[in-house]
Image (tube, rainbow, N blue to C red; front, side, top):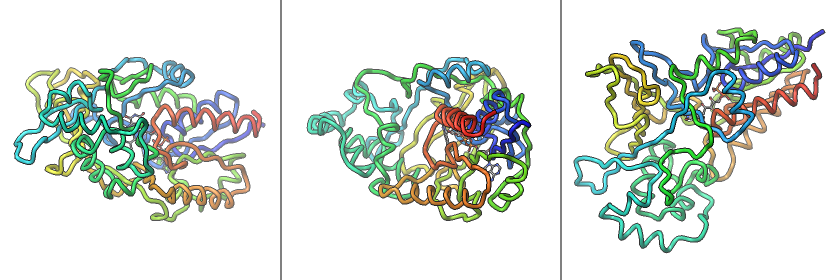
Length: 376
Ligand SMILES: Cc1cc2nc3c(=O)[nH]c(=O)nc-3n(C[C@H](O)[C@H](O)[C@H](O)COP(=O)(O)OP(=O)(O)OC[C@H]3O[C@@H](n4cnc5c(N)ncnc54)[C@H](O)[C@@H]3O)c2cc1C
């Protein structure tokens, strides 16, 4: 008799775990609460134009196994992701300047503020220090660059001062570039699929049983225990445990609109992703996915990324680590409701700020564990 595995959620983590366990001989069912697969990475179309309702998603990885896996499902189109930031150097400026993100020292030398920036850079410690996000980043690039590029963006994005945020995610997200590398990422493999990521995730799930429109919560523990020999949960744990508010999340709303263009290759904003740190606008960035897809089609979709939506997009990693502790407690409480082994994986269930490749690596690890602990 084949062992039965239930997987909650059909984003990258659930899809990959489900596929690997199916390939390993388990009878898998992926249960997804919405009517579509793909989770946060999913793209949609508006008048035929591909856009991303959950924010820009660029696939990048250094993980060889992950790279091979996504290649085998058709994710192979190279893409070099370059981000711009609109910076207002003085309150009197009517127009912002478009500069590279991360900031590039060679570009900064052309700015009137460079003498101040140069002085600040000369007095930085050899390695960035500080427990909170602001202290850490100021010690990495100095106060002037922090104020220009980071301060207001962070306040808008997180809705709280950067001094209350953990420094833990700063090294992964913030950098001052001295080597002229213009791409946002340095990973060996970077891709953008021409039609959005959906068809890649659909390929992963092509041999897996998926049941859509099925929300699963802790109240279903007994039924899940009867149907399966183990369950993998990729859902947010406060949602799954039916105690909203137990964990803090920061969400975004993409305000997306279709605009006509003069020609099929036409775009309306300067880059796929343009950061807008200024407090003059309420959004944090504009996203125009057509830059990345290279779609030849009449019109484009421009999205303004509005922070503060009541959705579970980003875990809030505070300096005291309180939310991560609460998530671990919730995982224990949920597991206590089940008579079968319960595994937690992915961005939401493990309350981590991880990218798609890390979600896939998580799925590979959990599939490996399940196979080792339950046998095929
Ligand atoms: C704004 C934003 C931008 C990002 N940009 C990038 C980027 O540029 N590059 C990159 O690599 N990564 C990026 N990421 C991260 C990427 O989205 C995640 O790493 C990845 O989607 C995680 O996949 P997952 O399967 O763990 O979670 P999700 O994609 O969230 O999937 C979870 C799935 O579970 C379903 N579900 C939830 N609760 C239940 C329930 N109770 N019952 C049944 N189903 C349920 C959901 O509907 C969803 O389909 C970004 C994330 C965000 C929020």
